[in-house]
Image (tube, rainbow, N blue to C red; front, side):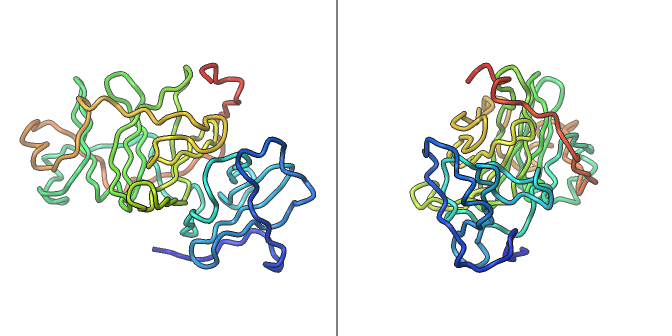
Length: 266
């Protein structure tokens, strides 16, 4: 795992400012910009800074890659950064598959997996591959879904992606978050949707920033998915598919953006 300190802005740590409360009513003052906001020193320091009246979390080399966390509901000190930007982990939007019968020996019959089922197909997602991609955008039973796996928390679930008359597309922020009162204090990945650039923390099944803040992650009905092994999936359906290993992936340079006023369900 690559650990290194992210620092967006040069200067003395004496310039560090505490992150204002997420329930602060007024915008953050521009007079604080561009001071670095400090979490704990070391590998888990997160780069947060003020600009244009808001607070932002590092997300990449371009300003538009950063996450607006002006009124979010997490604590900077409980974030862990691994030195990744928001496009480092290849969350797939157009996943490709092979026949499981042809590939099971490569993975091993006892390989644990997530299984997604509908009338059209049975698809297996080996957890060894899910640890690499973490998020897969798919469809099942006529609904857009997200297959998600966080190996740190051993969270493996399938969620719906349809909100407010729109389909969201999810990706991985490059951060994890831990709360000693939640999920036995385990670190869990923080994901984001490309459409509103809201951050979500699956360990509480909620969005924690942006236009979707406080919206729940919607778990797909369990008749359509389960945790299993590849051998059990193949025994149940000899025509089952399996996620193709290490797919080439180029992140988009831009994505259509939904504004808060587009989200009529809020």
